[in-house]
Length: 336
Ligand code: 5GP
Ligand code: MN
Image (cartoon, rainbow, N blue to C red; front, side, top):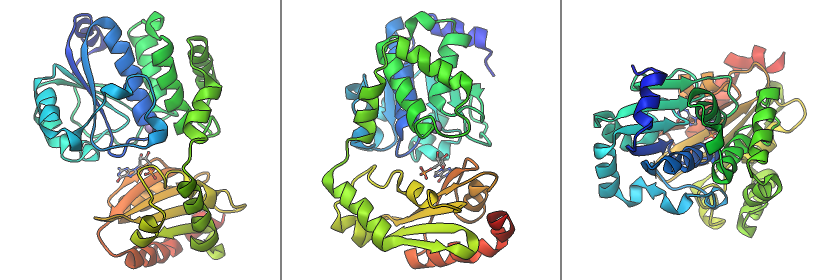
C-alpha cells in the first residue's frame, strides 16, 4: 500500500499515467476521469483516459474528450499504454471485472494502482485507495483528492471544474439524492467559481436528446410499463426488437428506470433490457430497500442500495419471470 505522501511525491514528477473507468461510462465515470485528466496534464504528466467501451453523446463534449481512447476500438494502443504506465487511476469502479477484458491488462501491469471510488465492497487490487461510499459521486472524491489530499486547489481550472461538475450533477440526479449534502453544494459552488457553467452543462447533458430517443421513451412508458401494486414495484421491459425499431444507441436507455420509480408509492423500479449478448437489469429503489441485494444475489451484479445493476444469460422472458418470483421474498420491505 502507498501512503498519500509517497503518492504525492510520485505525482510531483511527470509520470506515464492511465486513467480508466467502468464499462459503459456514465456522467460521473467520464466527469471524474476527465476532471482528473485535466488536472494531471497541467503538471506535465503524460496522461491518457482509456474507457473499456464507448459512451453516450450527451457526455462526449467535456474538455479532453477528443483525447479519450476507447479500448474496444484501439486494442493494441490501449494494451501498450496500460503495460507502460507508471500509475493507473481506477475511477468510479472497484473491481477489475467492471472493466471487462481491460481488467486483465490492468491487473498484469506493474503500474501503481490508485482507486478513487464510492461503490460498496471494493476488491483488493489497488496500491492506494481514496474511497467513500457516502460520496454522491466519484467526481466529488476527485475534487477532494486534488484539494484536500494534494493541496492543489489552484489547479482546479475551468476544464477541471466543468468535468467534475458534470460528474456530481449526473450521479446526484441533479443534486436531488439524499447524499447531496451541504458539503457537496459547497464543492459545487467552488466549481462554479472556478468556471463551470451550470446552465450550459445542464443543457448539454439533459436537453440533448434525439427525436428517436424521446419516442422510444414514450413507447416504454405507454406500452412497456408494468405496475405490480401488490409489491409497490414497477418494471419496464424492452426487447432487442424494440431497440432496433427505435434505433436505440448507447445512452438512450439511461435514466428511463427513474420514470418507473417516480410513480407515487413505488419503492422498487426495474428496467430490464435484452442486449445482443445478455439481458441487463437496472434497479432503483426508495429508502432502505436494498436494490443491490437483489442484483448481487440473483443477477451477477451489485451497486448502491438505491441504484444497482446486474445481468443474466437467460432469455428476456425468463429474467422477467425470475424478477417477479423474487418479489415475495422482499414483500415486507416493499410494503412497509
Ligand atoms: P445502471 O442501472 O445505471 O446500469 O447501474 C446503476 C449502478 O449499479 C451503477 O452505478 C453501478 O454501481 C451498479 N452496477 C450496474 N451494473 C452492475 C454490475 O453488473 N455489477 C456491479 N457490481 N454493479 C453494477
Ligand atoms: Mn459514480
